[in-house]
Length: 395
Image (cartoon, rainbow, N blue to C red):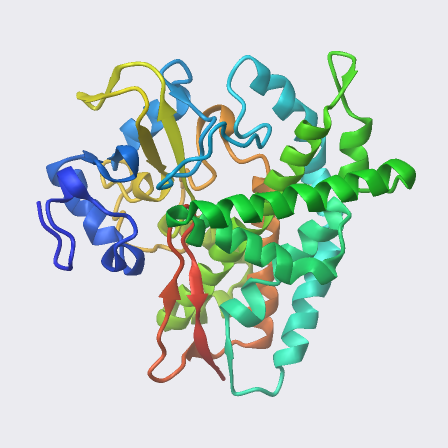
């Protein structure tokens, strides 16, 4: 099996950091799905890549053979791995770790944050009003979830640039640079340890205080657990959502018919968001094989990693009609952009709200926009895919 770009022999030696994969992975996944639906590479100490929905689903639900203790495929994984409860928690501990956070992310809890999200979007748009152009990623998408999750956590919004740097170092640049990962991790741990100490002395209405008051089986959470969960909430609450917002803007900038339709039918935006999440799902997680088993008939071996590509599963034509097309009024859209199994994204209600609000406010302000002439759009690599640079011309 061969791609049209620089990759070759994708079934035995794929490279998810290859420029052709980063720029446009969909035809590569289609080819893999047809010819070798569970591909493998010796890179990164051995990694499997399933592309069929049924195989991704089977792995996500199989906690006997696959562990969540390592979430990212790296050249040199940290040993021991960092904890990010509950996403790195395996059964039986996982259930209590996840249950603890559920009250923070119910639909009613998230509704309380919508006015702030809308105000943030309006403020960002206000800065762009009158401009002929902007970067939809750098000037808009990347700011929205940072400011919302900072308020929810109880950390200064002024530290947003620091948060964004950590995310890039951990999820992109650090994939091939273990020292960068170690440095960013140390900074994050120190930052949140200080924030926790501050909240012990001065409690507030935020997630840090919530975790300080929380108990599991009658016992308070350890500092390691609290800091690990705060790291997770920061990273997961920012990178995934800004990537999704950016992908939505990219689609609408390159598909005028869909943009016109959403401008004239604003009530269709939530349905369109579900389709954008299916078609441009940002997150590919990973699992570590801990017991010999088979996936789609392919043996997988302990100690190696599996890239759990929810984006590839969402493009499986055996599950989704016209899987390669974006149908903004698609009905019965059972996409898996937020994952499957016990680790399905706990913040899905928050992400949906932020994306919908971001598009509502953007389209109200800029009903006419498109890619800037000679625009060069770049996409992030690794765990999360979204536009890093999105030059737009504003109508």
